[in-house]
Amino acid sequence: MTWLFDSHIHLSDPVYQEDLSHTIKAMESMKIKACCVSMDYSNSKKTLEIAKQSELILPFIGIHPECANNDLDQMMNLIQDNIDIISGVGEIGLDPTYVQSDEDKKNQTHVFESLLSIAEKYEKPVSIHSRKSLDDVFEIMTSYKTKNALLHWFDGSKKQLTKAMDMDFFVSYGPVMVYANDKQTLLTKTNEEKILVETDGPVRFSRCFEMKSAQIGFIPSVIFCSSKILNKQYDEMAVILERNSKKFLGI
Image (cartoon, helix red, strand yellow):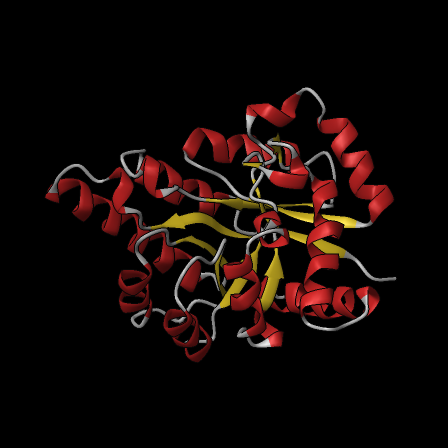
């Protein structure tokens, strides 16, 4: 039996709380496991709580670059205290969108590097946010030997994709790929062994998704689209993605 994986979704977001039990039932019936990433310390605690509800929820805890002023010491302690429970560290990374000063930039980098260090120490995979910051992420990552690293929602150039493949990163593609030609082109240039899929819910998507917050049920559509782009059968694509997801997670 092939399992599907959503490699990056914020199930601990308030958007999902009212219908979380329904979401879990859907995951069970559709055979989908989800890497549930976090935004900050309090959100990470919420992620750990909801992960107790189902073994299909794979908890990632960390500090998003938007929340880089969150208490880093508490976060580091939370990771260490739950190291045998968490599946990985994330969402972590860099994003100049949230930088207002040189001090902000230094702090964001410090938080990212600190969380990379603890992931490296405990050999945990990391889910990385790299919007408008891929080259900086590449430079920083040369100093770390994390077990596995995912550049979620890859949005770089073909040249940057080549660099990501050379550095042995995983990259993930989401619902936008169903209707975005540039993402479809990037997929064809990606090493087959490094492709993952995600929803990044509760992000909303247009076109066929009607601006609805991403749901776990979007994953088969992303896989179907991927299979067509790569000229494969759906089941073959699902097997490839299951293998890649397990490698990323170290399971």
